[in-house]
Length: 332
Image 1 (cartoon, helix red, strand yellow):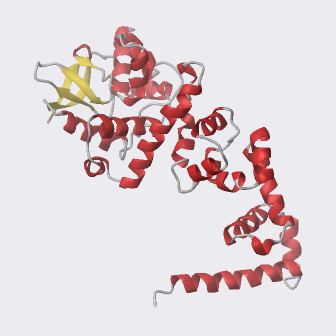
Image 2: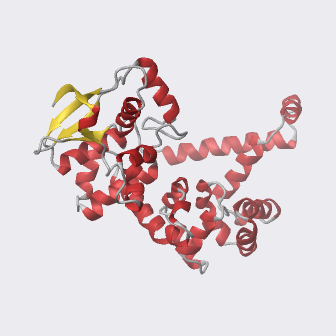
Image 3: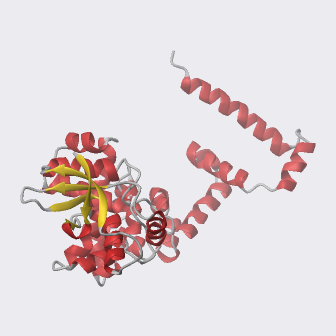
């Protein structure tokens, strides 16, 4: 490994980069210029480090170069290919080709010699899964799927590369399989694929979510349609599906109006019904939501009379909660 400045015209962009791999899959004969577009150079969007491409370009232009060298692999035939830093190289090339003021013909690089695929994977994972320049969840999952199902790395190898927990990596790969198998096929065209909906499929892997869908006589294709049609407004609300689908009225409202209306049905039932039959989780959620909405006027009123029913009941509940947590923390 060594530091060196290389000519930007002698380095290849990495077409296997998950950020542009989908574009390459759609257009196998993609040109270098089209790769710039796939990376979003000159267009609004997210860069390697979570900033917009525009702000990253302006930062590089203002600083007259990059702060962090890109990582490059020198192959046996003497050619160079990016391991990490596609976006920065593409910006340099854009400046170079458009004769932007400054010297953009050479870019700082950390050069590795003839790395194996496994070594390249390890560097990518460290840079993008646990490093400061994170890929979005869909790109991470796509890459992990590539390592697991196509390159046949073991879970232990993948975890050794990227850290974290095996369960989290498994959930990402399973979510990737589900979104590709059930969400992509229902789209009229591939350009409609919205990778920002991927988090819903990560939530889908949590315990009892799929089971609740199947028990309600639905399929994962139905779930994908709910995600596509925004019946699930906030992706974390996937966690509420067991409760929604387990309630006849809430399920009917969900299918016609979405998760917000369905959750309103559940909350109303909780308040109006026999609360002795509800779980501690349901009761705690209702109390927490009510406390979040409390007004300053109510607080001032309760402050003046702590013996009133509401503050007195809350103080009683507080004492019971403290006792409860002391009991469950007791290691004896």
